[in-house]
Image (cartoon, rainbow, N blue to C red; front, top):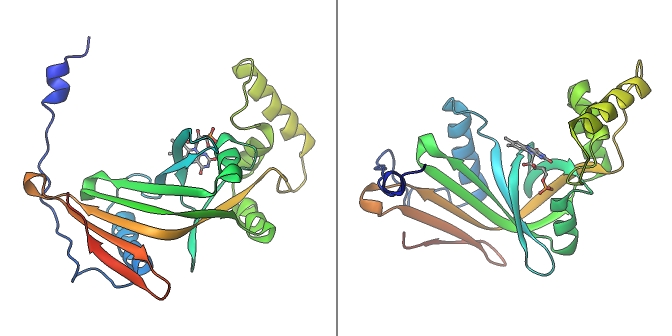
Length: 215
Ligand SMILES: Cc1cc2nc3c(=O)[nH]c(=O)nc-3n(C[C@H](O)[C@H](O)[C@H](O)COP(=O)(O)O)c2cc1C
């Protein structure tokens, strides 16, 4: 039995850092890099893990964790199956958001924008850098489709292992990268008394406007 009082009573004070309009970098891409670097150097587990939120044409939301695998001058790249639920959502509606929760740093970072596929060359380059086992895994899984049981996917893996034995494994045509091109960033730093700092960057035609949001 879960004790509701126990859940309701969970409380943590945030007091590690502060964030202000004057201290952040004027370019959100640079501020993103500063925070990601601090996360990478902090020793936290999988600092590149992010929640990806999408929604279908009729507005049904979907979200899941994916790994940030590249930063381009104009966006943030992750890799997945192009027939998965998330890819179907993105085909219907390219608007999406990514969110990093760096709990140990008392930070949350949300980036919202439009998503597009990266080039086949870029996907090939990344796919070739993956461990062979992961490459076979990508071939084996029709991600997000229903399967009868665990054995089914293990048999698929076995069959692709045999098929590619002694050969280089090509990039599947149903697999590759997506890039989220930002239109809005929100940097959240936990503060005392729930008076957290929320600094937002909003894309304007020529520059980024920096605003503070109420916590
Ligand atoms: C830590 C972590 C990292 C993950 N990284 C990826 C990833 O980079 N790409 C991916 O397709 N799925 C990744 N997954 C699995 C997804 O969360 C999800 O289950 C899968 O992509 C299917 O999502 P969909 O049905 O919404 O398309 C990851 C899961 C976790 C927990």
